[in-house]
Image 1 (tube, one colour):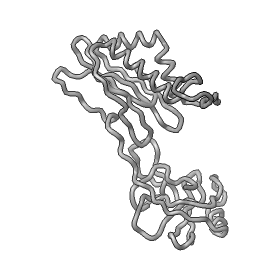
Image 2 (cartoon, one colour):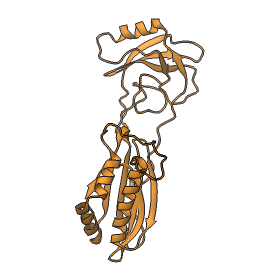
Image 3 (spheres, one colour):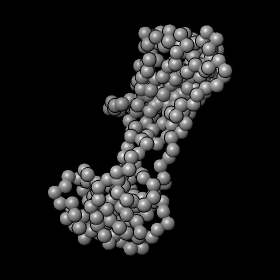
Image 4 (cartoon, one colour):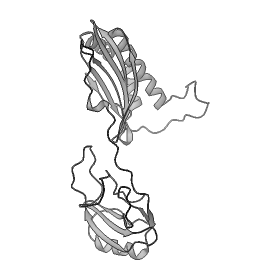
Length: 255
């Protein structure tokens, strides 16, 4: 049985003399964070812990208007948004039939995972996994924090009107966004003097301008997206042959 939602907490459970690790984690496209690991002694305790953790995360992520730990008036209704991890966590925890299935699954010594996505690419996950009799436990790749992308260069510059005109000419007839008034270097942090930033994002790449911290943009080039394969779901946002490491989505229009 599996579901979807951000976050995971871990705990150890004993089912038919088989201990479990119950986990709670959260993360996004860049990294995963272990939220907790708690030892328990029986499958029904593991199921109870998972349900309690789901409700705890739901309340912390999306407290109701009567939450006792919030001052009156701080919480107001907003338009529904999807995906909605807090709502998914609440629905799972309050569904008696699904809770029964979880207990039955754990009683058989089977693993369980529930994952819920949220807006912006974040997610939360709850899980219970049996520990082998020898006490060892294989580490899943998803349990380890994902490697972070390189730190992006912080150089910024204003876009002169003439460079905006050049950018439009270089990408005439190509669908894309508007020319921006200010851009930030899209490369990973580097020691070089020259910087490059997006002046107009395109459907198949971007128009990039070259500048330094002292000199305003002096060159505009239309370039496609970087073709290097990436470990995550997002492609590199730079261009072919760029220096330094790849930065997913770095080719945003502005800083």
